[in-house]
Length: 121
Image (cartoon, rainbow, N blue to C red; front, side, top):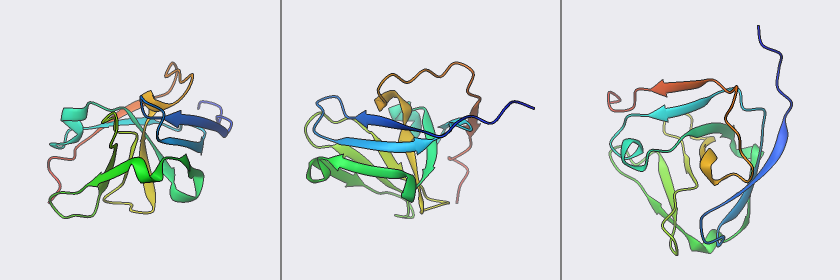
């Protein structure tokens, strides 16, 4: 069994820095998803509870996109178009955060799991 990782705070942003946020996580795993939107944006995500994420700047620079059941909400920067995070469909009190938007992120040693989103009804 691998030792438990320490919970740390990580800062993130979109490309133009209009949207800035931070999350608290120990990176238990990373996920990919094969649904129609996630496969196109090709993000690698970490799941965090809404209480572990804070938008520091640029909430007004975010635009939201919903489709299918209109439960998940995918957020994009209106200025640069980058996807930093989304509110999850199955667990709407959690966000999927695009780890490539995090400062100094290194995925070495963090397990990655592929999720099946296209089969969700």
